[in-house]
Amino acid sequence: MMDAFLFVGLPYLSLLLFVVGCIWRARREKFTLSARSSQFLEDRQLLFGSTPWHIGIGVVLLGHIMAGFLPKVWSSLLTVPGALLVVESVGVACSLLAIVGLSVLLVRRLTSGKVQAVTTPADLVVVGLLLAQVVVGLLSAVHYRYGAAWSTGTVVPYFWSLVKLEPDMTYVSGFPPLFKLHLTLAWVIILLVPFTRLIHLLALPLQYLWRSPILVLWNNARRRREAVVAVARAETRREFLKGAAGVAGAGGLLALGVMEKGVNYFRGPQPDPEVEAALLSKKLQRLQQTAEERELELERQRNEMILVARYSELTENKGKYFIDYAMAPALAFKDKDGLPLLISAKCTHLGCTVGSEVDSQGRILCPCHVSYFDLRTGRPNEGAPAKAPLRHIHWALVDSTGKVVARKAPGKPLEGTVDPATLAQCSVYIVKPRSNAA
Ligand code: FES
Image (cartoon, rainbow, N blue to C red; front, side, top):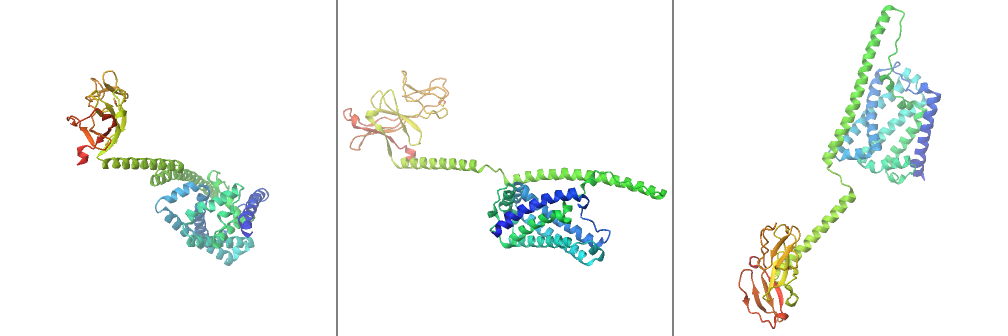
């Protein structure tokens, strides 16, 4: 219940009052939008308080704004080795600077009689709240380190859930009390902006960059001359500031571009997680397939002979495909003399599988680039893309009792005897090549 108020009710109340209050103040009291400078009452302590405070809080706020509005760029930046450490260190240093500056400003408000005269209770409340907020933020950063990184997955989505009017406080409801206090104080401070001197946040004097200097005319000739010189100087200063702002802007954009390139360089390509998962899955499939093929090959290598077909299945005109010891396609035929004829079906041109049909000239065709191979010699036809012959394969005939009755190695005479009467019961095997058998 309390969380719902602090992280849903209070933020909306603060944002509503901030918008309505700022519009009201800009319309009704537009001459009070500045911080109502007290510099002319006391400037020494102001210098040592205001300068470190504004530099410190400016850098810290810039980090918060970057993380909130450019979370992807911010997260990418933090992936650069060492960047997180640098960001955290700068954040802590700037928080300390802001605390020192704000403490000096608080002491000034409480001790300088002249400043006290223009100090309202609201001023003291604002300074006290700001001091508490920076101290709590610093303690959170030290206790729960690397908030610059983890906040993009918690506080930033919480903030955007509020902006989208789909508040999701679960992002922050589990936070430790110190961090909850930091968040709550932030909403309270935002709520107070329109009603206190914090309104000067919206009144940065940027118009000084393009507004013409005000010319003060004196009745005195010497003062008039001095005023003209002063105006000329002011004009020059203004032009310089404009140029410097332009260069700083361009430099900032350039730095952002370079930073992004640098981040991408160190991070490397970032493929889509789904595409990456699909690629990995395909790779895994290929590896499994390769492993299965390798296993099959090893299994085959363990056997001295591998069954190709029953002799009765072989014909002269159409070969029977099988896989040889090298895991390449091969064809088994019945030769004209009735014996088996086994030949590689891996084309010697570019490796296509040769067709199994025998043409009228006793040739088989590789259809890829049209090479005819003579079945008996293995040689390609004249002018064919393939230049080397298909190799014949060592075979063995095994009878129904498992006995090898005949075998023939390429280019060697037939070993054993073939009985035409029992041939039909025999099976044809390929024999392990000698080099593998050794
Ligand atoms: S691959 Fe067989 S002819 Fe080219």
